[in-house]
Amino acid sequence: MKKTILALASVAALAGPVQAQTYPARPVTMVVPFAAGGPTDIVARIVAEHMSKTLGQQIVVENVAGAGGTTGITRAAQSKNDGYTIMMGHMGTHGAAPALYANLKYDPTKDFEPVGMAAGTPILIVAKKAFPANNLKEMIAYLKANPDKVNQAHAGIGAVSHMTCVLFNSQVGIKPTAVPYSGTGPALNDLVSGQVDYMCDQIVNLVTQIKAGSIRAYAIASAERSPALPDVPTTKEAGMPEYEVTAWNAIFAPKGTPKEIVTALSSALDKALDDAPTKARLLELGGVLPSAKERGGEWLGAFVVKEVARWTPVLQASK
Ligand code: ASP
Image (cartoon, rainbow, N blue to C red):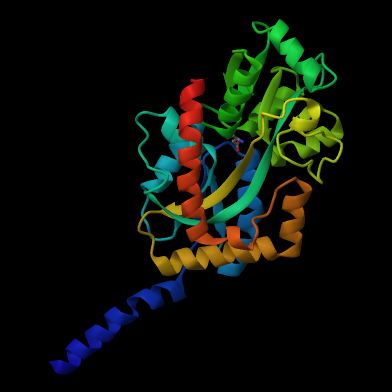
């Protein structure tokens, strides 16, 4: 009898570490809450590829688009918290959404186990190639003169492309026709073909098309120019210093995912970010890698609290 109890006790004591040692025993799903081909998808696929190698199991990206990313994040937040479903969130889903959705089914500050920051993504103001303006000042003048003619693409209410252009438009003083997409990947296709006039989006989606000359970039809304796009002026240089915003993409797991598993995921993410080819791919697309102190779940959790607090009043005021 005594022996059995002892045996059971040691099995129980081992349960945690054993679970972590055997994790992952099968592929892990990473929910991307936007269409394939856009910035969140791009960042997810780049880091997931290297994380898969570290974890010894494939991380499979699943695109679940809708409602500015909140559909996919809601679904991922409510899935089993066993480490086999994780998600790539961003400044919209985990910063802006509470201010814009009265019935949001998750709380970014409470319903997740933060895994880590994947990349900072400065915002650019871009337009179709035929947009009749040579620089940001001319663009703003055209927008002001033609507020009923212009349309602006975004990836749904609360998406980064929505919230950052809400800010841009309110600073310019216009309310253009907004055209929603399931992600800025498909929005960019329509910008390239000239179906929509302009958008505000995360750099990693845009560098290739800007370099190819198939869209126009008027300004980058960061303090410094991006090494990936040295010719694009900052908003400060281009005459709109009050418009400065950098978005981000980060990995989260559902609340209650075992700590050992979250730690395994965080360190796999760190390894990906320290891997030279992975790093190079993110940097050439203009991604900003998290510094040593910006790594891991603890930092990300505190950052999300600050982001929600920062965006809620700004977005409520510009509504
Ligand atoms: N960048 C997009 C946004 O506006 C979403 C995407 O990644 O497609 O939030």
